[in-house]
Length: 215
Image 1 (cartoon, helix red, strand yellow):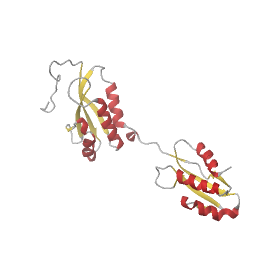
Image 2: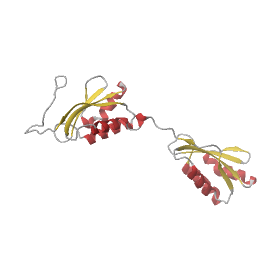
Image 3: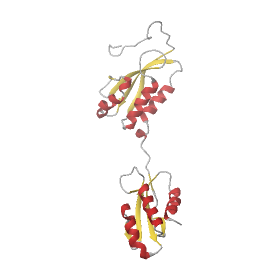
Image 4: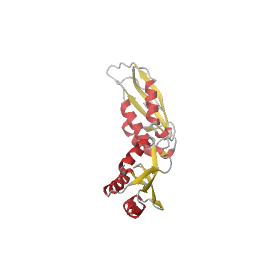
């Protein structure tokens, strides 16, 4: 069986979340070892006698031979008619699960809070209390479409959101802002301070509330 086909079969058996796999390539003809070493050179193989070991990693990994490069050198060996046996030299390493904070925590909190509101909510005031003062400047920039203000604490950003009437950013845009914070691993806690439901204003934006003397 051609080496590229052997790799396809091995690849299909790797765990779904694999991040690195060590492969051993042993030529059928020991006399072809030097030619194999030359062709495998770009993959930086290790060598023991006439057998070679290559560490293949996902494209996003920092160290090792990429899948694309490994396939290229195997195709070159196939084109030269060099027969060899390809096997896993060790169990594949699997990718560690990302912490909850990296999986969309702020956006998830926001969606959960919205789902807890009455179906006729019209507008609200919310805040995100960031876990570090180092996050404030960048967090405020990413939340800019929501027009946040620094209130309630040195790491607390407040903003308004409106669904039907009133003043504030749309809930969808607020969610997108939180997704941007999640994308940069900025963590914190989202909460809703005030909410107005069933608002039916006449020639106004509806009821308002005061916060620290400001509307």
